[in-house]
Structure formats: structure tokens, C-alpha cells
Length: 209
Ligand SMILES: C[S@@+](CC[C@H](N)C(=O)[O-])C[C@H]1O[C@@H](n2cnc3c(N)ncnc32)[C@H](O)[C@@H]1O
Image (cartoon, rainbow, N blue to C red; front, side, top):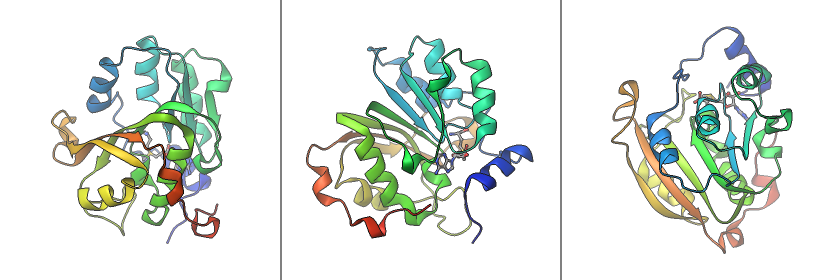
């Protein structure tokens, strides 16, 4: 299988094969952002791409935003539209990132990872969140484990994966997807459990870069 590394993603941006790119903020995320009251919370957007969600947050008055991507191309374009200091834009492999956040926003990053890295993703989001921090966003709800990205999945599988680490507040089909994603995505709102780290696996089974 082709390696989904930095070169792969830079190549997708350079060749303009960015079928995932909505060109605007995703409506389920927009609607979630619109009801957030505290604009000082710290927010991480991993695999942010062209960072439409980050731009929407910034234009809505949020400034404690970290925009992270393994590829430099989308980060450079994000910098042009979001007037935040350079240290808000992090070019790094998500699995090497350190920090503490109140909220992690998920939008077509989970599905961009090979399914064998899903537990590593969940453990990493768990580590990066403060107590009672939240992981919120959308996941695809169609089966596809082989021919991605995007790699899909089913609600039962997602629940089994996330439950050891997160309380599942919401995991249900989206009613407000953009038209091209209708019936294809699930909204998730998950709260970090205080004792979830007892379930961490051994280092050897984690994502290797
Ligand atoms: C399918 S795209 C989604 C981009 C953006 N979230 C959007 O919806 O437009 C996946 C993004 O994740 C980034 N990515 C892939 N693997 C990564 C990793 N291990 N760490 C950080 N970013 C990664 C890619 O460079 C790409 O920008």
C-alpha cells in the first residue's frame, strides 16, 4: 500500500487532487462553533488542510487556535487568510505533537489515516486534551477499509474504539451536512474520560512514522 506520509499529502496538494476540500467551512462544524460561548478556549485542528474551520473560528473571535498539518502547502495558504502569529501554524506529524487543548476539531483527518492507526489517533487525541476536553467533528459513516483515503467505518466500530477513552455525548448521522456529504457523515461530540489512560496499549503497537 502507498505510504500516506508528508510527500504523499504534499503531492496531493501540488497536483490539485484535493477532492476532500469543500472550499468553505463544513456546516456541522460551523453550527457547532456558532453555539460555543467561551471564545478563549484552546482549539487544535489536526490535518487542517486549507483550514476553513480555523478561518471561521478566527473570524468569529477565537484566537487560541492551533492549525496543524503534516504538509506545508495548505499551511502557507492558511497563513494568508488567518492573521495569527506563525506559531499558531504547526507543520508536524500529529502523532509527534505535544500540547494541551480544550477542544480538538475533527474534519476529514481521521478518515485520512490508515485504519490501523485509529487507536493511535484516539490515544493521541486523549493525551492532547485537558480534563473533560472535547473531540468534536464529523466521521464518515460508510464502510471502506481498503481503498482510501478516505477510509470509512460504522458507528458500532467507532463506539467500540472511542468508548475506553471518551464519553460519547453524540455520535449520530448528521442532519446538516453539505449536499455532497449528505447521508455520508456522522456528527461526534465526545468528552475525555478522566480514567481513560488506564487502557493505553503498549508503545510497540502505536503508530510508527
Ligand atoms: C483529507 S485531508 C483534510 C484536510 C482538511 N481537514 C479539510 O477537510 O479540508 C487530510 C489532511 O491531513 C493531513 N495529514 C495527513 N496525515 C497527517 C499527519 N500524520 N499529521 C498531520 N497532518 C496529516 C494532510 O496533509 C491533509 O491536509
